[in-house]
Image (cartoon, rainbow over all chains, first blue to last red; front, side, top):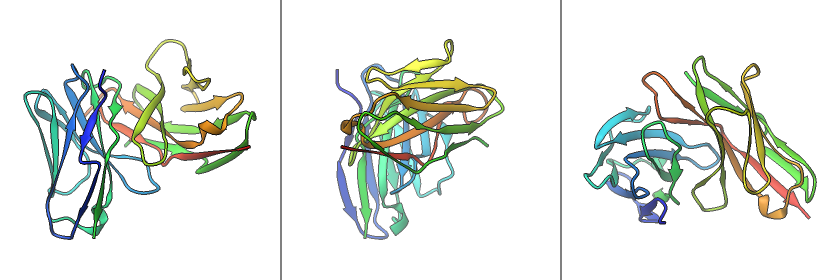
Length: 112
Length: 116
């Protein structure tokens, strides 16, 4: 069975640009969460979506937005990129909101 | 607010030695507890989890962790490590009630390095 998939694997952007990251959950999983992992730190929660509705938002600015599609895949958008947005962005899926989360390989974003 | 403290940022050990990676959390409500492992340039892999029931949980590759409610700890142990266990280990907590339901809170990670 396929695990959580994310695209692209790597991305290089310049300050002020916009980026879209994509995630496909494990088949049958209805919840998708996004996390940001800055080098040397643990992942920080950004968003959780369940059945296409936002169920939680972490302490991130409004430049960060996300959505979940009818097939439960998800996109994370970041506008007006800053150098500090450089990080590994992880997507996790779970059957329901409070079930165990399984992570994808991540998208490495570098902002120059 | 929930918090997770991993008491050691780096743990170097020799192959076949025992190891303990420590994790403490703060929460006033019921929680689920997890250990994830991250190999270089990869995502997180679930190592083991405590949801309910027996306080001692085990993984398929010889790790175990014990939930201690009174000490709010969930330490990870392995009696004999291999070089292939070299990785970053993250402890995580999920709160079961309130506005933060479903999100994971992570510690800063412990880098386990196994030397031959």
